Amino acid sequence: MMNRKDCRHCCCWILLVAFLMVGGLLAAPVPLVVHSDPWRFHKGTVAPQADWMTVAEAGLLASWGIGPGGFGYGDGDDATVLTDMRDQYSTLYLRAGFELPDDADLTEPVFLVVDYDDAFIAWINGVEIARSANAPGAVGTEPAYSELAEGNHEAAAGGGAAPTYINLGPAQDLFTTGEGILALMGLNVSSGSSDFTLKADLLLGAPAVPETSIVEDTRWVFAESPYLLPETVTVEAGATLTIEPGVVIQLGAGRDLVIRGRLVAEGTEEQRIRFTGMDDGLSWGRIDFLPNTLEQRLVYVDIAQSDKAGNVRAEGARLFLESVVWSETDQQLLAVDDTALIVRNCVFPGISSQELVHFDGMPEDGYADFVGNWFGPTTGYSDIVDFTGGKLPGPIARFIGNVFTFGVDDGLDFDGTDALIEGNIFMRIHQDTARSSSSNAIATGERNGHTAHVMIARNIIFDCDHALLLKEGATAVLQNNTIVRIRDG
Image: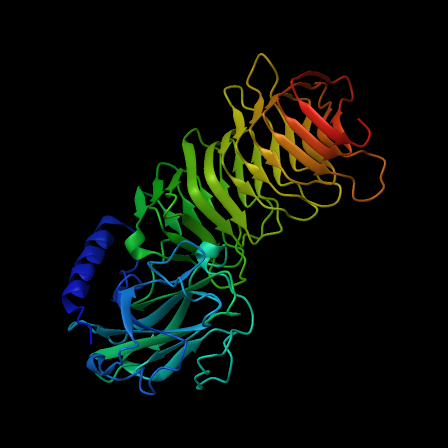
């Protein structure tokens, strides 16, 4: 058995210090098994030995290797990459030994945390403790080594849900001694699948649950991730919430993160921050920025499973978004009113029957820069981006280097707005059903007595019904654009 007692005591001290630095949280859980620890693993080319879940470390056969977790291939999040798994085997077996701290409170709950693609079953000391809904066979049975998952499930790095948290109940009901073996079997949906992931943590104690009102500067740290928000949490005026790279925030159904103070959520390319629901398929509300002169920052952030129009909403705010990716929602992604806004290198996936982005009202000292973003489609009588506000000589909208992949109404619709539209790609914007209005890469109109004037330069407009609609007194300057395969000009 691998002895991690010294490492565990070190981790406990680190978590204790982190807890003392962060106000308003319950005590941090104690890690019993960490997914990045060394694990013993067996590739499912043949069945493992019969006692693989319980035998002592020294009793494992030579087919068992050792490597850092997580395990898998195809999605870039694996420490032990299974380069030979595709088309060769569909299952993987893992096990790790652990020891309970001498001062462990056995009335505390134990949580199993699993990030997986596509299915898993878990045991402690040979007793089944959890299995995914798509794992084959009945509860209490171990599938054959050649079995397959009964359906897809994407891991977090593959664009799926956040890792699954399973409450196993009080420690005293699970453990009869101070030692144990956590064992897992991972199953792919097919031997030729494009990816596979299996990583697991075992925690003693509940994950962090913040107070519903944050009144002083607070940091949510990676060591205490995930943060569970069963109720709406508000960052009050005068307080700053800082979220470290790699933190996962899971919100309850319909719950919001409301910002009256300041939010600084800055991940990295390797450790993105993730907002998602508390369970697979459970939708939460939105991130809501209320009137404020402080710059709010979302950088390398994933926003998944939001179920309110305006997954990110801002009113009277200053908002900086970079490398934000939305997923698993059919609601409007970004809604801003009277807000200064920078949006860079973000991914806006397709939704149904709503604008992806709605902007209304440019502050006198504002800005609205959309640079290097990717926009999916929408359906019905809905634009990709609907924009109102900003007239020269004041601040205006700037759309530079974006890609608009598909649409059925307008790609960009400017009402009473001046704008610079430079270096973008517009393609496949076609009316999906007969109606009186047309579908256009770029459209303009009047709003509150203001007409639109747009500068359109160095864009590619390809395979659209119309390149440009000027109406209600709008004007445009076109320079060095490439316009190809337009139905009506």
